[in-house]
Length: 203
Image (cartoon, rainbow, N blue to C red; front, side):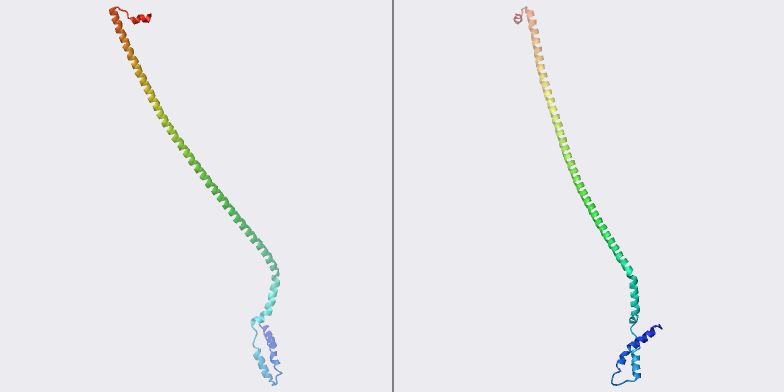
């Protein structure tokens, strides 16, 4: 602080010359009045920032010189940062492309699986229809076979019945003829006459 006081005095002396310029006036003023004016103007110190400007400017100059190399490093760091950002952007882009590819593949697989499932369902339905039709046909054929077999059995039974009736008629007629021949033979024996038909048969 002791060093700053002379500086203030010098500033006061530098600011004092304006009153000396007023000396050429026609009315000379006493030295005491000039001194009072100088004293009135001298106590006004400049603002602290103005006093510190030379010191601060030097300090800033030193700081700028010291920070010059880091500026190159920061440019290199910004390049690395840009490269890292570009790499991250590329990775993000690749990730999005991969996600899109996986999504498209999943959609294709789901679509194919849905179509295959529909085809399998259609095949099973058609097979079921064909098997049902075949079963119905088999049932119809079995029914027809049973009906035909029954018809055949009925026909066979009817033929057997007719044959039995015919046999019965033949047997009855044979019995009648045998009985008649026996009666005629007994009659001829009684009369002693030989039947004419017998000779005709022999003749």
